[in-house]
Each structure stands twice: as structure tokens, then as C-alpha cells.
Image (tube, rainbow, N blue to C red; front, top):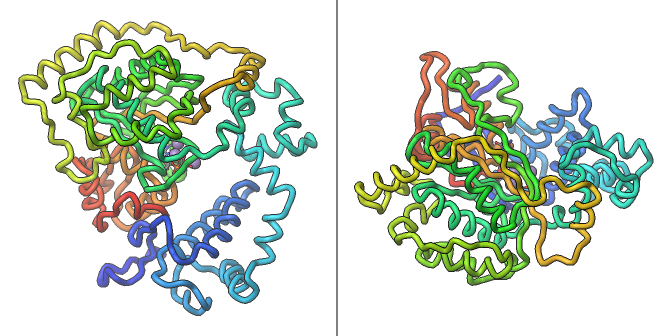
Length: 469
Ligand code: CTP
Ligand code: MN
Ligand code: MN
Ligand code: MN
């Protein structure tokens, strides 16, 4: 069933991860329609809808990698992922300019409401359906109903619905990245901070910001997240979120159960939540331009303190320290050359270790807005404010798993799904965000850069911008 032709690289592969896909391509009219059908199947979320959704996505990915604009469905003969249903949809678009099936869904009230409601943070298809069953038509209707959920994500998601629905721009992502890097350098100068997710794939906006962090000294990464959140709270940038502990154990690498392939569940320590973004993040060109000029990083924090008022400790680190992770796109192996000399590095590590020991008592961190009542959350959202609420995912990986975590958190979601299935079916390897495991040999395959991950998988290296499957 899984035929892979390795004799001719230029031949179009059955695997999306082999072909790659860029953000823009010449078949957008078709992929938009197919992804609407995918989205519709995901929202229906009944027995066979998972595989229907996947089939539409696979077909869409074939069109993304076509080197020409489709003019005739005959051009798709021989492509594994183009079934009868998809062929009909494409033929309709080619013949009449649109597909009746797609347009009916696009104009259906149910689809509108499902999209509206699942856009609330914490709301999936099941909850959205129950809201529709209650007769609610709009976010205003849901808000009027009052306390409808114990899940803080839903109360915060409803209160800040408009904020969270407005796409995060690349300017905001870069401003936030700069801030995180500045704070991390104070906490742990050797740490590595990378923006992943859609922004790393070159998207100009997204529904959130995903930041992956690690530390070259294995184990030293374990305390950085709580310290970072403490620092962000001091800057009054934390609204609400939750911590997940690292629950990884090495047996999980070889865990062959089916669910591993289907879900995007991983075991990293993370913070998932909502942050305050000063309005200046959207416009501050100066802040953006400091991105690659690390010596000016601390000044950017000063600029920010004008808005947040609470960044106090401006002790500028020696520039060697500030430089260390200046480039965090982190793809080629050469990127992790540290500019500190060994003596300085060991001093830094020693200091960090001491600080971590001092800080290791599990004191309950209280963030400023953590305990607001639902009413208080609503009045905060309705207050006169110079900030926007933004969804943020902060993930921490041990360095030994870092490049697998990087591939996993860069995505796309479908690229991950495809590359993991390819690894299993073609090579007998189990790929997750934690590593790659050879099921036959019973051993893990470590990687010290993203290219090495692709080499282990016998795949041509794909730049993040080519992983938009
Ligand atoms: N991911 C993951 N584990 C999760 C959540 C997400 O590995 N628990 C991966 C997803 O596969 C995705 C990436 O991390 O590729 C980022 O997830 P997400 O923010 O949901 O998607 P983006 O591609 O960044 O899209 P958007 O721009 O809408 O945020
Ligand atoms: Mn994202
Ligand atoms: Mn998403
Ligand atoms: Mn995310």
C-alpha cells in the first residue's frame, strides 16, 4: 500500500514530506476549497470524519506541490491521493468556477457557527455543537448566558474573543521574541530561544506564538520556564495560563501504540496561555530591527518598560553573553558555536546551577491576574487598555531532544503527520518530538541539527518554509 519510488528523485513522490510545500503556489483556488472540506469534516467530528478530513488534506498537499496550475483533472491521473470525490470537486471548479458542495458548506449557517464557536480558546467541536443546540447564534449570545464553563480558557477566550481572533503579526512575534530573549539572557545566558510554528515556516501571521527553548547543558533547561514566567509577570505581561511538567521517559521513544502517530501530544515542560502584548509591539520598528543586533537587546527592554512600567533590572550582560544565541533559526549545524570562551562558559554554568539550587523549592508562583473572577476578567477585557491579549505557547526541551522538538514544533501539523507515517511505514522508525527510534535495532538515533534528522530519515532536507504541507 505504501509504494515509494527512490529511483528518481524528481518524480512526484507519494509522500508530502518528500515533496515539500511552500506557502504560496499556483493552485490556491483548489487547495482553499479542499481545505474548507477538510475543515468541515473536522468540525463534524463523527466516526469517519477523521479519515475524510485527512483525505482532503492529502489531496490539497498534492496540488500544493504541482509545478503547474491545474487546467484539467486528467493531469492528476496517477496521483495516489486524488480520489473520486476530490476529482469531482476539482472538475466543478474547473468547469463552473466553483464547487456546489463547497459553496453550500461555505454559506451554511451551521458551518459559520461552528467556526465562530471553535475560534474561542478552549472550545472544540463538541462544545461548539452543544452551544448551537442551545440556540446560540453569536458570541454575544454565549456571553449573555454568563458562567457557562469551569474551564478558564473558555472564560478568558470569551472575554478576549476579539483580541485572540485578530491574527498575530510577524512584527508582534518578533517584538515578543526579542523580549523573551532579553529576559532569558538575564536568567540563563547560554539558553537558546527559537520562534517555531507558523512564523518559522514564513507565515506573516498566526493564531499564536510558539517559542521553543533549550539549554546546551543537559538538565540546565529544567528551571528556565518558571523563571522566565516570573520575569514576564514582573513586567506585567502574563494574563493567564497553565504549566505542564516534563513527563518524558525514555521508554516513550519506542512506544509503538497507534495513538502516538495520530495525536500531537508530547511530554515537554510547557506553558500554554495568554499574554499581554503592548500595542507598541505592532508598530515599533526599532524593536524589530534590533533582532539581529544583539548588543542593543537590553535597550529594547527599556523601550518596553515605558509601556509595562515594571522592567526593573537593567543590568546589561557582557556582550559575549548577549551574543550567544543571536541566531536562533537554528537550522545548520554550525549555528551553535558559542562565542564565550570556555572559562567564562563554565563560570556562567556554575552561577546558573547555584541559582537553580537556591530556587528549587516549589513555591507556588502567583501571577497578577491568575485568580480573577469571571466578572473581573470581563471588566479587564472591557477596560481602557493599551495592550492586546495574545495566545502564547512556551515549550522547553532538553538539548538531547532539541532538534526533534524543533521539527515537531515547526510543523506544519500535516507535515508532521506525513513524515511520522513515512518514518514508520517506509523505514520502520518511530518519529516523535522527542526523538527517532529504530524499532528493529531497538536504539534511538540522536541528532545534533535539523539536517541530521532528515538524513536519518533518508529525506532531502526541507527548509521550514518548504514544510507548509
Ligand atoms: N504542536 C505540537 N504539539 C502540540 C501543539 C502543536 O507538536 N501540543 C505542533 C503542531 O504540529 C504545529 C506546531 O506545533 O506544527 C505549532 O502549532 P500551532 O501553533 O497550533 O500551529 P501553527 O502551525 O503555528 O499555526 P498558527 O499560525 O495558526 O499558530
Ligand atoms: Mn502557532
Ligand atoms: Mn493552530
Ligand atoms: Mn501553538
